[in-house]
Length: 164
Image (tube, rainbow, N blue to C red; front, top):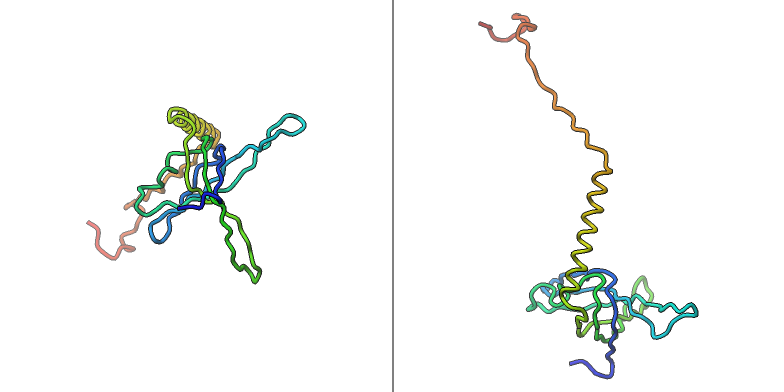
């Protein structure tokens, strides 16, 4: 159980699809980035967003990537997390690294909305792929050399066996 005094929550949109890495013991590490709006606007009235990196761990018993298999780039999610301080030595220097470890994820949009956004991304990517294929020069296919033997061109005395 986590300490309720050291947890925080944010609402944001995913900057990319979650990346899933499998550990040696079968558990999985999930890394994602979420754009989280600040609580104020700048002088021009624009709201500033910060890209925050998060990580989560999925137990061995959980099928696939757990709830992280159902979120994609652009989805609006609520993330409850605990800050972690990793301390290690690298090249003789002591390094302190803050990690934001996800404890809970909440889906804040309907499945229909997220599936429509994903389908739109797929359609756009397919269109770009077709445009690139249309712009690419046609591949040049070289014909395989055909071996032709002319028996009349070969003298009988050059053959190691008699011809009939």
